[in-house]
Amino acid sequence: MDLRQLESFVCVARHGHITRAARELFVTQPALSQQIRRLERELGVVLLTRTATGVELTPAGADLAQRAQRILADVAQARGAMDDHAGVHRGVARVAAATGDAHGLPAALASFHAAHPEVRLALRQGSEHEVLALLAQGAVDLVVTSQPAPPGTSAVAVGDQPLVVAAVAGDDLIGTGGGPVAVSALRERILILGERGTALRGVVVAACQAAGFSPVPLLEISGAAAVLTLVRAGLGVAVVPAAWVAGADGIATAAVTTTGGSRLTLGTTLVRGGELGPAAALLEAHLLSALR
Image (cartoon, rainbow, N blue to C red):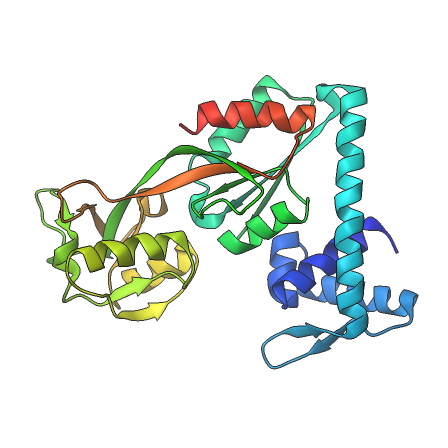
C-alpha cells in the first residue's frame, strides 16, 4: 500500500463513482478499477460495493477512507515542513479550481512558472464542492472558487466574472446592436441552469427572483461544454461566465443587467485552509495580484 493508492482510493470515496474519480486523476477507468482491486487484495478486505449509480464504501472502506485522509494530510504537512528547510525553490504549490471558476488561472499559473521555474505546480479541477473537499483534506493549499469560504478557512476576493446570456445564434433575445439583456427578459424563456448548490445557479436564481419571477429550468447540468451544447442545439438559454463562451461557434451572447441596471457578475475568491509552506505562500501572493 503506497500513497498513490491511498490518494486514488480517497478520490473514489469522495466521488462515490469510479469514472468521475478517474477523470479527476487523469487515468482511465479500467486502470483505476484495477488499482482499487489490487489494494483490496493487499489488504484482504472488500472496500467498495457497486450500485446502480456508482460505488459505496463498505465498513472497511469507510474506515480506510478516514485513515487515508489523515495520512495524506500528515504527508502534506511533512512536505510543507521540508519545504521550509529546503527553501521555496524546491517546494510544491498545490491549487484547485472549480471548472467554472478557472477563468484567468491558466495564464496566472503560466506567469508564476515563468518567474519561479523551480517551484512545481500541482493543479486539480472538479466541482465547487469537490475542490473545497480537497482543501479540507489537506490535498491542496489553495482553492479558486465562487462558493462562500468554509469555516476555518481564509478567503480574499480576487474579482468578479462578468456573466452573459447565451442563446443559439439568431435568437431574437440577442439584439443586433450588441446591447445588454435585462434579467426580466428571461421570464418567458426556457433556462438551462447549473446544478443545485453551485454559486452560479444561486446568482442567476437570485437575480430572477429580484426581477419578480422564479426560473423553471429545462435541465440542471454541470460543466461549460455540456451547457453550451444544449444552448447551441436551441433547447434553451443560459446565463454563464463570459469566459465560457469566448470564441464559441453557433452561440450569440449579450451582457446581463439586473433590475437595478447593473451588470450581473459572479464573485470569485482565493481560499486557503491554514498555514502555507514557502512555495504555496509565494503562489498565493502571485494569484492575489494576477487574478484581480
